[in-house]
Amino acid sequence: MKVLETKRLILRNFYEKDVYDFYQFAKNHNVTNSAGWKPHNSIEESERLINRFIEDDNVWAIVWKENNKVIGCITFKDDIKRLVNDAKMIGYSLCEEYWGKGIMTEAVNQVLEYAFQEMCVVSVAAYHFYFNQRSKRVLDKCGFVFESKLRCSYEMYNGEILDEYCYSILREEYLLKHLLK
Image (tube, rainbow, N blue to C red; front, side, top):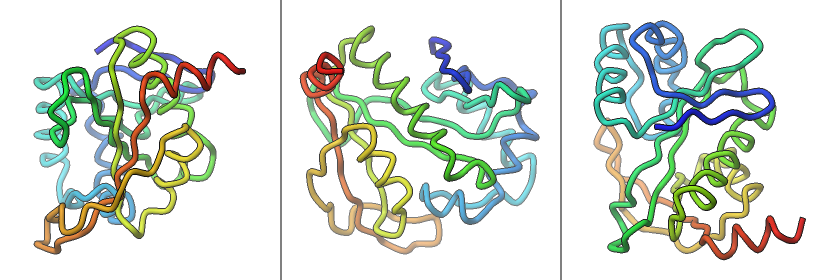
């Protein structure tokens, strides 16, 4: 994936050397539960996932420029819930100590700029669970529009079935919003 940069962040591919940083937030239940995945029990588990990220090439590591530490990740891939070419979906996780600093909003906005201005995608969707109000705020700040609640649409690692709240932003909406600035 292309390297993206903001004032405080670098979004880049994962490297094997990122495993320790990744494990630090991937073992945190507050982080992983919000994203719908199981907390990692070992650094080896994080290593396997990073290797998959490297192979699939659809996940950015979020690097905090100040200390060059991987503090989160953003998945950007085809939207499996839409049968439209060039429809993408985004998902993200952030180390808990960096919550509430506008970091994810900054990262998502940079991905949207890349998606709509360079890749010319049609739409970008995102989903969150009812209890993840932080994610909802990121989507609101980034201009996503609430579409619907998808009932019983996601099975958690522990077998619990959850509803997902679906948001999207269309290319025209993004461009209009940024032309008016």
